[in-house]
Image (tube, one colour):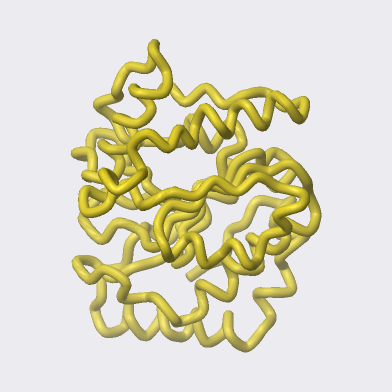
Length: 224
């Protein structure tokens, strides 16, 4: 794995790459590849979220757990899929909620969320790689230490960021965030298993925009 990180993030996080856990993580990934394991996303987009959303542009963080493990789905942005790929169920539910929140929102047929990332929405998965067809297969190998550091860095070095935490896993990360400086929006996960338990109707996107505008920032255009 080659580490390709946008320059503002590299300045803040470069010390992480010299720590033992990151060396162990790289060794794990290299061993997986030697054993013939197919890894998603492709090596050149593992850090895509950082590339599209430089540190000083971050306004919203949407935290996911794991990259998609199907072919041609994951491209380094949480909940997002590559152009032309069928929408996963959670993403369909995210678009349904957007339609309910914004009268003029048209549900997209395309699930590539790069437009959000380019506006300052950091689409961060806690684990940045996965083995093909094996969900959660790269958890607890070191990625979470790295992405926890990302969350803490944003919390400590900025203010008035919106953190959107869907589901129990993401909500555990609240402990890393200074709630006096930032807005945390929590609800059940948009997965079909939990969306009807409080995700639908939670209005995370309009709440995020209201907070950004109140704090002198441009709202996010969620339409793709």
